[in-house]
Length: 334
Image 1 (cartoon, one colour):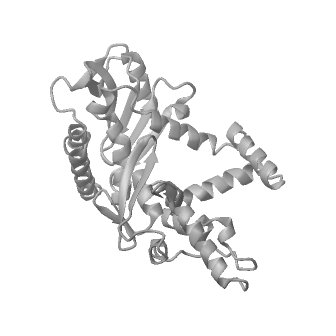
Image 2 (spheres, one colour):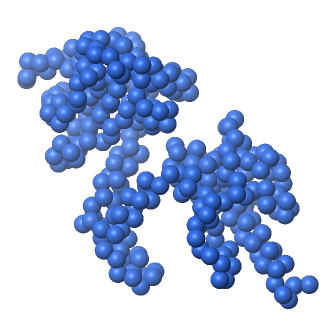
């Protein structure tokens, strides 16, 4: 829904102007929450119900979102300056359970919290995601990637939220020192390097990796093959110059207008080299990793092993360039 995404991002930009105001719950719903629900496709009478009675509690749910002829989610609204608490979340989950609806969204127009009423365990285990609309464009885009999963079109289809739920479980598991995933990583370090490391060391390393800025994570020399480092050379991390594609082009290993391809999650993608950069879906990216990350919703990605030219990865071509340099610089070279 590209048009809906643009409309959402424009609304998010406008939300920043409202952030300092003291709006009542009613005004928050009219100016901040209703527009988002409309962008998500809930416009017709059959798509959305308001003030839905919860018979067992004699209270009302602010919104019931419907898709495929069935209620799919409920939304509880709070005033703009109202902080969303666990008590609000517990109440929303309770309403959802009574109404037989799985998804609960709570919003004060700026912050949106998502809960899965069917998830097992305490309230914290039911918490799926939290996004905000009042920060920068990147934060707003992240909010769209989450909230668009609750569009009427998305909820009309078979489970659209698998990715979101998987990411939530991964984040939770990788933060627990007693998680089986952390134990497996400790064993992997032991088997590969013969080092015994603590579970906390693994968790800390994961958190540092996840927090690392994408441009640094993607474009450090550490991304290069290990055999590309000359014996005795410093291993201190440094930034790679531009994308490195120009070197491949100048060496004759890659045409200046090469057609690149990759496959992610079973879907093929095509891009083209332009002036040492990568043109993808109408946008230009300075590095292979930046172009790959754009296909993975901004997640850090090693574009050198993702993008291919005539079946060979860019990393393979770069390795050829490295070997050619070593042959040239070798004393035995003629």
